[in-house]
Image (cartoon, rainbow, N blue to C red; front, top):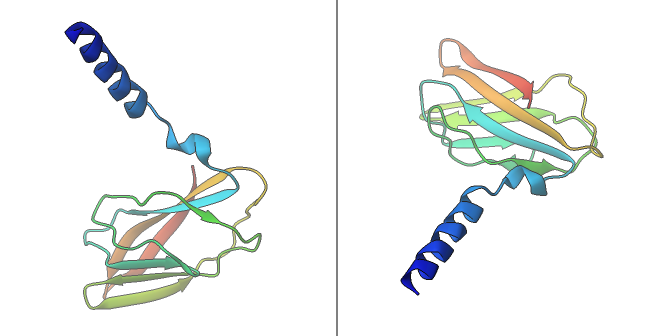
Length: 119
């Protein structure tokens, strides 16, 4: 009986540990990765809030429902606050598209530097 319980427990851990959360995604999904040297306290892409993101960390993907392009990226860190136009990139809201807004630099001298990557 103990062997069965141990085997059942290990099987549960393997099943949960191997779950691919990207399998449940649809449409356009956007996340934010912070490659800067400071923690970010608040991030918005248009009206979607991504919250706090520590250095070298990434947020989970969030669904972007609009077929229009995102208009702005707003970032707060310490006493700094930046709002930048996103620029021009194509999205297809029907097919699964995964994008990462990678924030490379946030500073008073260099401003906000970011890239949009298709995952």
